[in-house]
Length: 104
Image 1 (cartoon, rainbow, N blue to C red):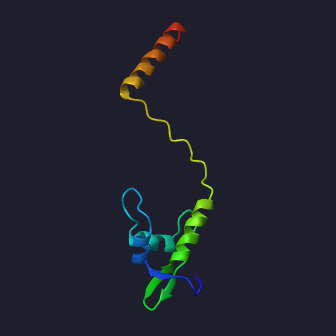
Image 2: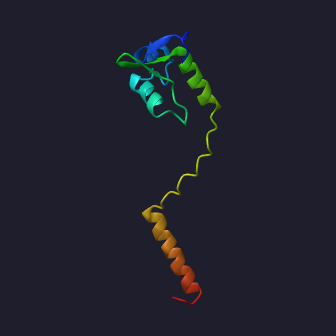
Image 3: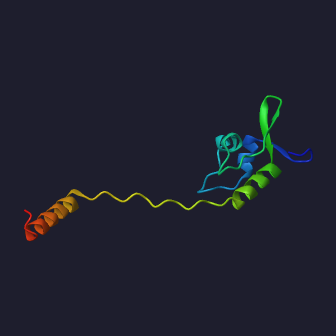
């Protein structure tokens, strides 16, 4: 953070952000962005006295970097398990095929 930036507490930062799904991000979310990051991007913070603070400009840089992060392609969801009815139907079909082949 630079000297001429507007320093804000995490609570002030959370209040300054827009609402998502009708709610503003919690102060714990700001802390998590600072400690763990989001999609590999961390929010810049400084310790001021006994508190951690960030800046409005750091929030702006954080959001800009997040917008530039490429999202990996999502893997296909695992196939759904067949229901008991489908499983029994498949077993009956297999038995019929074996009978027609003269195996059963």
